[in-house]
Image 1 (cartoon, helix red, strand yellow):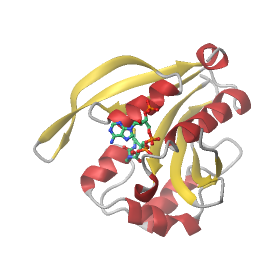
Image 2 (cartoon, protein in one colour; image 1 turned 30 degrees about the horizontal axis):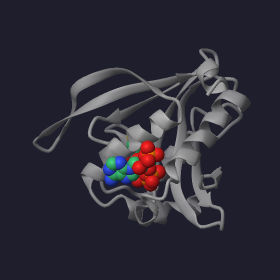
Image 3 (cartoon, protein in one colour; image 1 turned 90 degrees about the horizontal axis):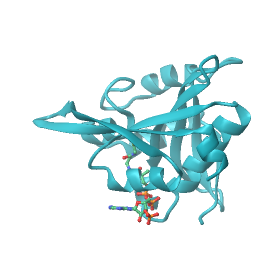
Image 4 (cartoon, protein in one colour; image 1 turned 90 degrees about the vertical axis):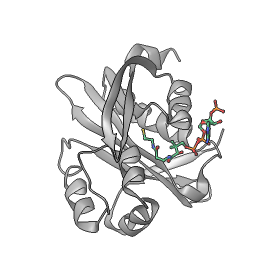
Length: 176
Ligand SMILES: CC(C)(COP(=O)(O)OP(=O)(O)OC[C@H]1O[C@@H](n2cnc3c(N)ncnc32)[C@H](O)[C@@H]1OP(=O)(O)O)[C@@H](O)C(=O)NCCC(=O)NCCS
C-alpha cells in the first residue's frame, strides 16, 4: 500500500488547496454545503484554520504528503466531541493529479489512528454523496459501514444528491 504522512494544515497550503477546487460542484462534493462557498478563498481558509487552534480544537485539518514529501491531499477530523467521544471524517481530498494511485486509504487510516488511538474516540462518522464510488470504496476498505441514506438531501444546480451516512466504531477499528 502507498505510504503517506500528515502534517497540520497551515497558511502555506491555502493557494494549492484553492487551486484544487475548480467549481461549486467540486467544492460541495469535497466539503459539503456549509463551511465554504465557491470560489474558495484564503479568508475562508483562515476562518477554517481557526477551528484547529487551542488545546481542544473542534477540528484537526491535515495536509497529506507522499513518501517522497510531495503534497498530495487534504483531510480533516472534524466535529470533535471529546465528551461524547465522537468525530466526523470530513473534507477528504486527493490532489487531482494524484488520484487513482490508492492514496486515499492510507490518509483515512492515519486519521482513524489519530481519532481512536490518540484522542480515544468511540465513533467516527462521515457523509459521502451516493455517486462518489471512489470515496465509498475507500471508506469501506478502511472499515466504515453504511448506516443509512439521506435521499436527495443536497440540491446542486438542478440535481439532487443522495448522501450516504457511514461510521466506524472503536472496536471495529481495533479488530479490522
Ligand atoms: C474521493 C477521493 C479522495 C478518492 O481518492 P482517489 O485517489 O481518487 O482514489 P484511490 O486511488 O485512493 O482509490 C480508492 C478506491 O476507489 C476506486 N476508484 C478510484 N477511482 C475510481 C473511479 N473513478 N471510479 C470508481 N472507483 C474508483 C479504487 O479502485 C479504490 O478501490 P479499491 O481499493 O477497492 O480498488 C478522490 O477521488 C477525491 O479527492 N475526489 C474529490 C473530493 C471528494 O470527492 N472527496 C470525498 C468527500 S466525501
